[in-house]
Image (cartoon, rainbow, N blue to C red; front, side):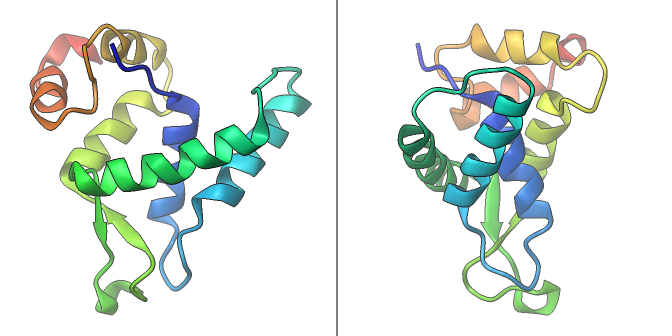
Amino acid sequence: MTTYNWDLIERLLHEVQNSAGHSFTPRPYAEQLSAEKAEEGELIGNLDHLKVIATEYEKLLLDRGFIASRPEDEGGNGENFVLTPRGSSLLSLIDSSIPGNDHPRQVLDEQQDALDEVTFDEVASKAQIA
């Protein structure tokens, strides 16, 4: 069973939304998340490992259709992205600013691979997940 760091994925998806006009850089976003968690008294683990995971998540999110290259007319520079409908759906499920986000994360964690395209689309289509 594949497990994901939903907080890191959430950060990456939010940064994708804000990446118009500048390059998407997952490693610094992982560092920022780690610093925020440390301020809250939470241990995030090895920072270098988290940065590697962030880079792997960027590729996974792109390869599996959660993000796509940002069009030039929307501030695309060849090194930034937009959320696809699938990516928007994922962000709405795991967004920590939305009350009750723990349940969707739990449901996703129960899947063999929650970010497998077919699995995610099936799970996300169920009304009871949110």
